[in-house]
Amino acid sequence: MSSLISENDLKHEAELVWLEDISRLDYVRQSLDRLPTRTSKPAYHRDGRMVGYATLATDAKASRASGTFRRRVFWLLPHDRDTDPDGLYASSAPAEAVDPVTLQPRTKGRKTERSEGGPPSSAMRELGITLPL
Image (cartoon, rainbow, N blue to C red; front, top):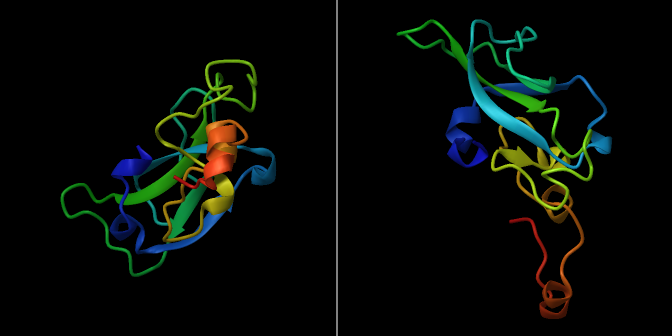
């Protein structure tokens, strides 16, 4: 989950590679996966589709135990809002979801009003409260 990813986990990121136009996506799911390389496109073994991934700088060290690198992968499931706008996440988002426009290398991203499913409530507007969360 996004909340379990720390900035320290991302300190060796060099670039985020997007496989789709993220400006059309309200949110993407992110996870920290163990992968065999620093830079190549990872294999994808989830339902749905991969929409992006992080590459690592050459100084990133592999795990001594597994020989793998921890890299972020960004993905969506078939029931996510982009393909099922009236479905489960019509007015909310999964726990591991973040607004893709808030993502940069070495920055974990955050939830926004857009990623959470809509405009702020009238109470939030009256109090002057805005997301990001």
